[in-house]
Image: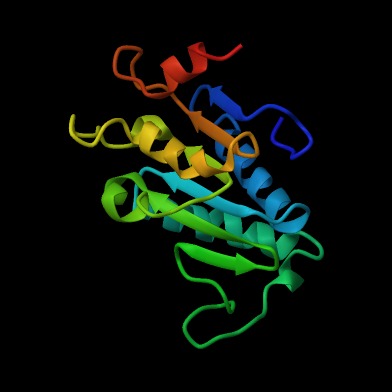
Length: 173
């Protein structure tokens, strides 16, 4: 359902702890980097989780996927790949940007992406009433793409009463 050929626009995955939600997000991101380059946003609960995702998942995956690693120019003095920073990656035809829910005012604003992957959204700090729900802020990032966007959200619900993912999951078909 995450492929560009699918008419599905939003995929919400709700499940137990460590049940492939982040792996699905990582594989989806690799697909868009390699086969259908687009502007991709990866949103997670904190800068620490973004760093962990980069070190433990994204970078090793890029190194392991035949042909993907070669799309990135190697060696610059400040990072292990040219076009890489901790929260941004550029590749031919697209880019990857990471946004932290703990830095929503800085990371979620003025970012327009066609493809969005939200990871562990129930771990995102609650928004103030003035800011609105962080999920709605995140969905605003794809608003300019009409029906040409894809959004994936995966999370383990914290509690049904306070969960962000649970009502999203229930609103699906």
